[in-house]
Each structure stands twice: as structure tokens, then as C-alpha cells.
Amino acid sequence: MEVSQVKGKFDLAKRLGIRHPIFLAPMAGEAAKPGFVAAVSDAGGLGNLGAGYMAPEALRTAIDEIRKLTKAPFGINLFAPLSPVVQDLEQIAQYGRALEPIHRELALGEPSLPGHLAEDFDTQFDVVLAARVPVFSYTFGPIGKDRVAALKEGGTFVVGTATNVAEGLALQDEGVDAVIAQGAEAGGHRGTFMGSFAEGLMGTMALVPALVDALRIPVIAAGGIADRRGVRAAMALGASGVTVGTAFLSTRESPLGEAYKAALLAPTAERVTRVTSAISGRPARGLVNTLMTTLEQVDAGAPPYPLANAMTRALRKSAGGQGRADYLSLWAGQAVPLNRSWAVSDLMEELAKGLA
Image (cartoon, rainbow, N blue to C red; front, side, top):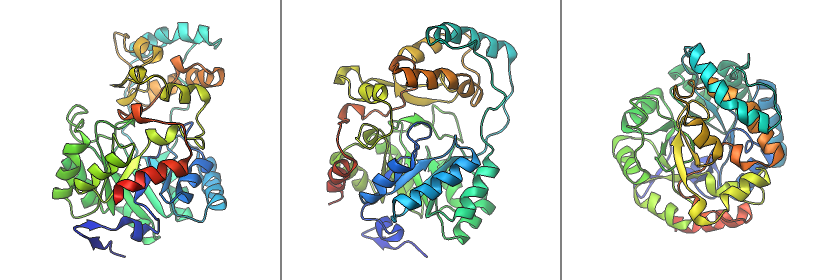
């Protein structure tokens, strides 16, 4: 089915069978819970499960649970497969030494590089394809025309993530139905896969109209959107919908631990974000804390993703259990000063007012 154009834009809500073209950003890790996804879908938006860290069986179970919790459409997101990384043993050792005092403080064993670094994309993808989910999105790069075509043949609406115009054109050529324009303001990992990460740090206000002018498919704005004003601005720039992540993280239905939520709701002057590669090995925007500043001092830098991400996994999990926000990866976008503690339905109502 072709997406119909309305007033120069694409009617995503009608195409996807949702009330509002407002997507929950797919956030992997602690936020990736079926109940959270279902709450956003039931509120009239599109809940998305960030399944990049999920083992295939866990992903299959999560999809089944979402379907039990809501009859509304939802989406699944995966990380596109990355090229194998070179393991620099000295860099890994230096990074491990930087982690040692944090491990001691959290009463953990010696840091090391785990044998299991990341989930296998092909196996995850097979689960999604078999499940015929309503919407599938991906980030970190292309997944191939054959995979996109297979998803679409099964009735899935496919969305890629772009941080510059070249990426948007490549994704359109791959056959996606829509593109998420990830502005520099967005929290979490950067999706850049063409050009340097610095070149991919286009602000939402510049990126959205550039992609709208260059593409024939819908553009969904992401980055710095947390209330009706952000939605209105994105739509004025030509976006056909918006993706919101950070603002949903402090809602009552959010599965984040209290320490993370407290950091998102700290005094406004303390809610400062920065893009760093120090925690996961891939540029990501988050709240500045002790973990970030400590690891940014490693002379050799962090090993490339997913090596660093795997090496910090144990301490981040332990810090969450101990309520230690100073040692969490507090991924958040630049609009975090606008965060409030309220219900998902109330936030959705506020965001939807920007569509009028």
C-alpha cells in the first residue's frame, strides 16, 4: 500500500493505524520492556521496542507479550550488522585498568572482555521476519535490499535511520518506507554510517528539511522533541511524524530504575548532556556523570563498539541494582531539561497538541 500524501506530507497515522504520528524512540537495554511499548501504543502513538541487545528467544517472547498487552500497532528496532572490529590488546588492557577502581567500588570482580560481545543480527532478524511485526526500524547502517523487501512482503512498514542526506538517500534506495532523521540533539547512540560522526551531527532543524527536500518518502524527526513546541516545529519543517525518547523515560510507566529517573529530573542546571564514545565505544549522547568523565580520560580511548560496551556491561548492571546513577550510562537527549514525571498518556496528550 502506498502512503497517501496530505498537504504535502504523508499521513503516517492513517497508514499505520495509529491516532498520532508520534513514535516512542526504540531504546535498547533497561527501557526495552513490553509494558512500556504497549503503554505508548495504547496512548495513541507507536510504541517501539529497542531489541538490539536481546537474544533471539527473549525477542520472540517480548513480541508475544506486546501482542498480549495491546491490540494497537507497535514496532521493533535492531542494530544493523557491523563490520568485525580489530581487537587492540593494549587498548583493551588500558581500558580495563581504568575500570578496575569502579569495579572495586561496586564490589565486582576484575574487568575483562566477555566472550559474548553482541547478539547475532541474522538470528534476531529471522525472529522479526517470522513475527510479521507492524513496524520494523533499524540503525547503525544498511541491512540490504533483500531483507527490506522480505519484511515489506510480510506487511511490515520498514524505517531506516539517517543522520545526513547521503544516508537518507542510501536508505531510500534500499527500499525503506520512511526515514528517521536523527538530529544531533537526540539521546543515545548515533546512527551515523556514512561519513564521519562529526559530519553526522546535524541539528534536527537543519537535517529534517534537508531530508524532506531530498527524499520521496516520509521523514520522521528525532532529537530535541519533548513537548508540543518541538512537535510543531518538526511538522513545520516538513516532517510527517516525530520520534520521542528522553521525555518518555521519566514517565510513570517507564521501566527505568529510580536512580536513572532521578538524574533525568535533577535540577535543570545539572541536566547537561554530551556525546561520548568512552562508555560503549560508539558515540552516544548522555548525561555527564562520573562514569563518563572517568573513562574519557583513558589515553588510548575506549575500544570500538561492541568491545567497550561489553566490558562496561557488568558494572552498569551492578550500578543500576545499587542505585548508583554516577556509574550508569545515562543516555539522554538535549531536551532533557523539559522532562517531567507524569503518565505516558499525559505526555502523549501534550505532544499531540503540536500536531494541530
